[in-house]
Length: 279
Length: 347
Image 1 (cartoon, helix red, strand yellow):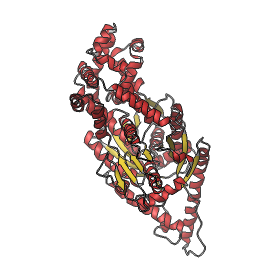
Image 2 (spheres, one colour):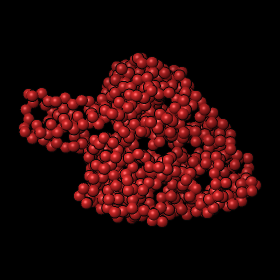
Image 3 (cartoon, chains in turn red, green):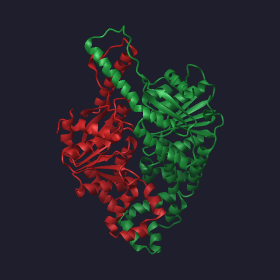
Image 4 (cartoon, helix red, strand yellow):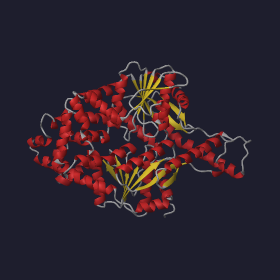
């Protein structure tokens, strides 16, 4: 699988979800993809779970930032129905309700999914990349509309949840997994995919295998010095882990391990890598 | 042994994917070998590590781990769903209440999707184990959290949810919408009904009424957990590795800990790249191979340089000590390699 195919396919989508184990560089991959897509002339946004309104340091220029905050999303949700901001502030902006919204089963995930749905329906951006929290939370995020559907049989949430489930199965939406070529992350990706498949008829896209070691082919199999033996072993392990990753049944896109001095230059290098041939 | 390891409860925390589970297990092995009766509480170990610790089939039980060097080591893996059922059983005031809650679909969704139930269950389990005085050392592999705050904030949210002010909306016979109605906020009632649907409010009300009498249990436990975390009996160790992203994650976690007055005892800086050693001249190589060796050496040195500024930053943290753990050249999956790693941690 090549970077141009990945970018070309991404340009056809409206929403792309990214998930993977913590510490695999998922956010960097999302930002670099956003930058590469923006370079193709698209209006691109990255949505991420966040406590703050402003993008984190290193966030790429020319890309829009959508923080997903439960209370702000709940407010938008309620304003669909209430339509008076002042009324919301006086009635809903209190401690009891905040606690209720943050902790009521599935409600937090539902209002956040509702926000994503609204952005999609209003066509605010050409492409929205959703940086999901790591695997465990991502599973419960996708699970919650199903649970919520069971307990909300009428009302706005019920209608919205129905639409969310339709959206997740849509051709406009893709779900990508991010991993690194190490045992734990690839095993988790394979398990995650089989769990996700049971939840919704997703259109899975790619398995992005991040931080691949550089290959110096002539050194493969050498063990005449500690430096060489270690490197050969590392390559062998990487290859074995890649074989495990293939069990996902997804096309694998390999991304190099980039030793950049800071996040800005990492994103720049990674996005160049993604758009090199497309441009 | 460093004074930091003298605490009875050792919490190993940090951002996801830094090797917390492996380091917690190693620490457990090393402490057991020093003669302490040790238990390691873990959440979701990799399969081979689970096999090494011998608890693949027994979640929530305490299993003996056979050690080569001798010593008493036990391990226990947390299964949140099943453990949560146990919490309900414990706090339920009668068998009827227990049945009602476990069968309520709202409960299932709460355990599945309520942010914080993993963290709550982990802390509850720790409290249960800590009450058994026969353990000399309890090593806790904290649950992976996206947001470092969650470990402390999530159990609090759950306790808050059980807070009287929320529950009183629903309990003692009054449905939420009636109360809002009485308060004169007609439009709010209509809006909430339109958004959530009256049946949801009813079944949520029913669920919360089922929980009546249990909220005190939840809240007391939360307070006990906080008191335990702040006590001298408990030490917190940050596991991380030297990169900008992990530095930023760690900063958020430490700020959260400081906010709860939980001190940082030590830093385990994992996967530190060792300085590469150049080849001896007697290794015979082709021209292409020699060129590749130069490239490989350059890459290795670049890796070391890449980590250096972050290693230095972590060294400035106000902890009692920082241990650098060299990147392991082989995956750590058996008790012997856990023991080796554990000795580095204690050194």
